[in-house]
Picture (cartoon, rainbow, N blue to C red):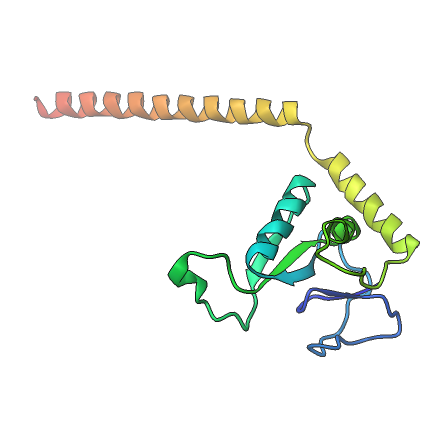
Length: 171
């Protein structure tokens, strides 16, 4: 699998060295969280695809296509043409979802089983490295308590210095 970091496209042709669209040198071993362009959609189809990806809890982002006219600003409509991006590790699942809802007729070139397994193992390892939710809550709580203690300490120190200064000048 090869990846273009500019176009965010995947290529399954190992003999390719440069992107067919922008001529940039392809990356042969992309990071599992690198964004890849899933599909370009507009209007209702765009909202339908976003809802399907949201319901599968797949992280995504979108960006207006370069050839978008921007007319949707006038009527508060969704962007005319948006590229939807997902992490490479979620690409296969996203394609399956789009085929399931009829947004794609046929899948793009498939990954090799080796590529899919490598991406899944990298994503699983990263997920294991993340902090457990309970520990993260405890750290947030302790951070808030320390912040409040610092705030109280600064207030008392300011009050004490103000009192000392007033006593010094005889107020």
